[in-house]
Length: 228
Image (cartoon, rainbow, N blue to C red; front, side, top):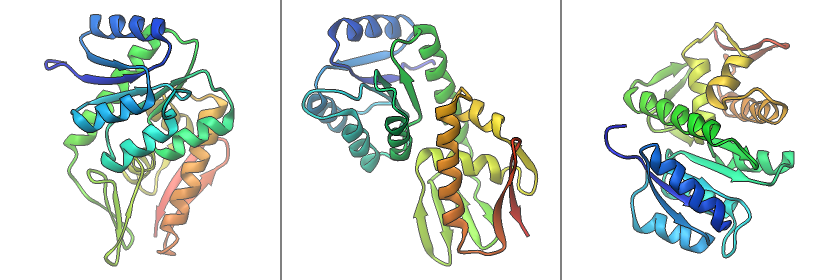
């Protein structure tokens, strides 16, 4: 990163917050720390950030609410939850909002760094890809997270967009489930696997408007986006 990536960090554990700031800044990032949810979202509105790291349980405004407000203003900025909440429902709620990763405390700092770099790398590749992709009667615009059919537009979440892009780039060919999980989540654990199921179900619902399009499940292997 030639110019410093500016990270918004919202974490109410003061010790952890300071340690993360020190670690991330030593790795070339510009980090602004806030320990209150309302302070965090106000900072986002008042400045420009490239990346957001949010705790979930925060005073003032919880991380889920912050992420929802961020997504209303910016559909593409990477958001990572860093939280002690381990329930499947909490993880699914986060991914349904459109966050890019959900990391459970305690965590390894080097793993966090690798995940941040992987997300930034995907976003850089994504921002360079300006192509639209024709899928049956749909026009898929991954740059703007848009799926259009007959002038009707659907704005996708970042994760929906990334999953559909992987399938669309290999249209009518098998995309392995493990490849999707490792590429987009960095892990193929149970919770991420169930999250992928949620996104596949949503994409199937969106694509139902063209009955020539389907996402075929190849059990225990992966998916084929069929465009007949």
